[in-house]
Every structure is written in C-alpha cells, then in structure tokens.
Length: 270
Image 1 (cartoon, helix red, strand yellow):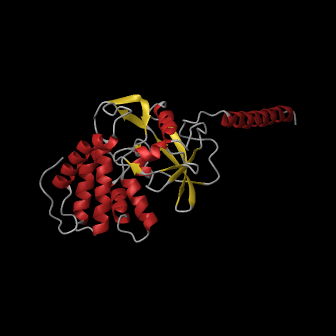
Image 2: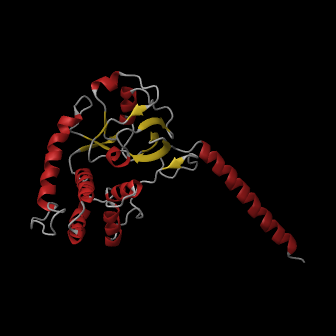
Image 3: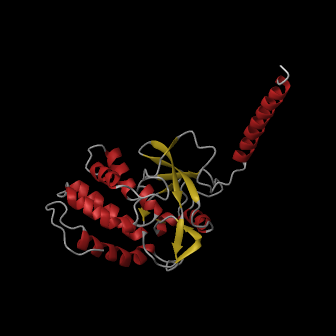
C-alpha cells in the first residue's frame, strides 16, 4: 500500500510521455522532410513497392534470383512484372551469378529470355562508372520537342525512359504522372518546369510519384540518381545513350546468348 503513490506516479509519467511522443510525432509528420525514405503519412491509395525483396545492404540469394527468373515465365503479367522489377534491383556485380543461374535453367522460354535481356540491360547500364553530378538529381525520362512545349492538363505522360536509370525500372510508357506527393510544388503539367525542379534536387532524394496506370492510381517511390556529367541540360539523351546501349548489347552477346535454344554459353566472362 505504501508503494502505490510511487507506482501511480510512474504510470502517470509513462502516460504523459506517451502522449507527448504522440503529439510530437503528429507535429513531425506535418513538417517532415519529404525526401526521407520513411514517410510518416503514406497516401491512402496503393503504393507500389519497388523490389527487390531483400533488405538494404544485403545481396539477393541464389534462391531468390531463381524465383525471380521463374516469375519471368509466369502467365500472370503482374507476377512477371514483379520478377522484372526484382531482378532490376541487382547490381552489375551480380550479373555473373545471374548468368550462371540462367544457364542452369536454359533453355528459357522466348518471353522469359526477352524479359531477362531487358533486366540485364538495366542492371548493366545502371552500374556504370562515368563521372556524375551528385548535386543534380536525374530520373531518366525524356520528352520530344512537341511534348516539351505543350501544357498537359491531366499530368505528364511517360513517353520515353532511358535504360539504366530509375524511371526505366519503376515507370512504364503510358503512365501519367499526376502529382509529386511529397513535393506538391513541382509542376506536373509542364515538361520544362518539371525537369528544372528535378535538376535542383540532390541525388538520393525520393519522389513519391502519383501515377495513373491501367485505370489504377498508384504512388511509386523513385530515388533520384546523380545526373551524368557528360549529359548537359540541352543535350539529346538519345544520342548520348547510343554508345552506352552498344556497349551493353556487346556484353549481352558475349555472356547471355542462346538462352532460348541451348544450355551452352560462350566462355567469355565479364
């Protein structure tokens, strides 16, 4: 009985601390920096999770890679898409292991091989070592001169994605960007204004892009990467990309050919 007041005081302190923490969390949510990867208040609509299913800083296991390779042949397009996005989360250092596991599964189905080629292209090009501008973010989207001059009342259409950059992995041609959830000040109706806003952000910033895809509304988290130093603002990315694509095509030919018809691979190693 004599200890009750102490216990009550302890409980009261805990309750007050919990209330203050909740109030502080609510206030922090209101003023949270939008570039942090863990957003306190996620939109109520569906948020597309960007694979891989491994924890940050860990490598995918052989079993996971085999599972994702199998998903490339699934009849369900959503499962195939999940496999592609997961495999695109690998690094260039993982490509020899991916090659060995694909070799063990050969011959692959034609659709499976085509999807794998897209994966290898993205992973290989995203792991390049060219000079970059770390204080300038880059998505890897491109619009032609006509679309760049138009006002897009419904949002920015995804017309062309550059291989090796975040947009290629996470967005699709035909997507409509209707809002940047965590940066509502970014204009999604004018191409030039949108690009200028992205260029002012540092690499590593995460944009929560609200998109319309196939009649569904999604929020896709996309982390900006450093802008290539060899790509000035007024350059044509398609021309700049040509040499990179030729290099990747040569890599594929030397390391991943004959997947559909044979389990025999060339002896060349990366």
